[in-house]
Image (cartoon, rainbow, N blue to C red):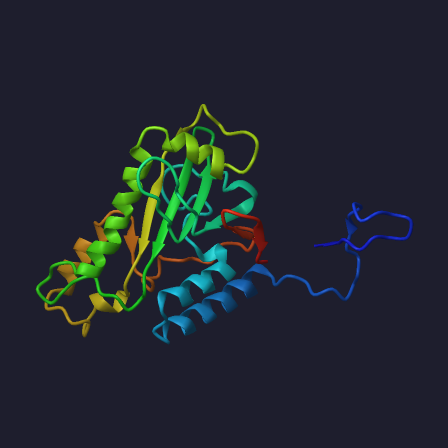
Amino acid sequence: MTDVRPRRGTSWDAVVPDTYPARPRALACEQYSDRALSDWYALLSQEPEEDEVQRFLELHPSMIPGGSGDVGPGGHHGSDMGAVFRRPNLVGGGRTFQPDFMWVTRSTSQITPILVEIEKPSKRWFRRDGRPTSEFTHAHDQLNDWRSWFARDGNKALFREKFLLLSEKHEDRLLEPQYVLIYGRESEFGIGGGHANPNGLRYKRDHETATTTYTNGRTLPTQPPGIGRAVFTDGPAKEVG
């Protein structure tokens, strides 16, 4: 943190270190992780709406999958400025789309946009007859819409220009998007979840590309607080921690 108040004889352009000893300090990573996860599971226990989940993750962007290279190939260099985009507009050839969140991570050989769609946690994956629900089919089809957008001529170039924040657009690196859908609850696939063959449905779920539940123990890990320090929209950045 820096103190941007001007010292005597300086202008507003001067930025000096914040040496005020009573300034509140950031929580240690372990404390932050414990507190954030406690608040997260408390929220899920209240059967939240999708917009409530969205607001929580905007305050805790380190919990959004993809920021540390944990989704898809590469991405271990992280995202520019440690930033995640909030509901970015994919504007170009064809229809316009708006994922809930998006990381843009890098490695030495490629650029990896990671587009994330979240849904209301109480939505179910399967009907009693074992077929996907219409809600799941609709949510999953959004990932196919995004794939179609990136496949259109010229859209990847537009994406580089708009969403690679630094001046270097890395034209020599492949741009290979990844798509994530966070949907449903792990309890649907256990005893009492309403299915006669939960193990078979769990197998189908786990072999569905880039989909996971809210509470399966693998989703939304709390990464170090430095991952996802800001949430960006298509306009100015908003600091969140």
